[in-house]
Length: 147
Ligand code: DQA
Image (spheres, rainbow, N blue to C red):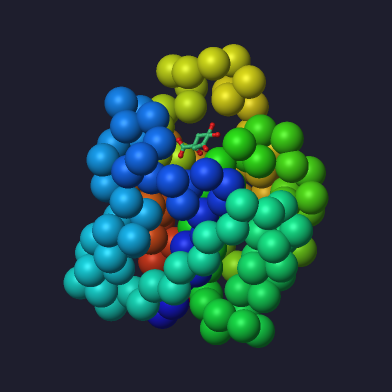
């Protein structure tokens, strides 16, 4: 079982960006932590990050062809709140998909309360830092295991 973990704009700045919200861990260290956790459950992980909307659509479309993955964990950053292109890309692939956020977007500014991606995902997990991604991996494993 393999899961593609996609991070969108500004998540490459983790560890440097608004540390009081997103913590001190870099994206590379967080990904390493998630990969080690997932491995314990027999889940292989592959990671992709881009600041560019079209590239994120491409990665989603290529979940099987390029990444050979069975599911997607996506933190689309601010695109979550307005990118119908990414929403459509999610709608075009038939694998389990979970939207995640490091912060609790519902406890923040109003514009962060809306997701235009969630309706094309199996579920949403937010507010648990790196654990949001780990929980999402387990959620996808549950869906795949149940068949
Ligand atoms: C975020 C929340 C978004 O609102 C924000 O634009 C981000 C990060 C999160 O992980 O908490 O870039 O997706």
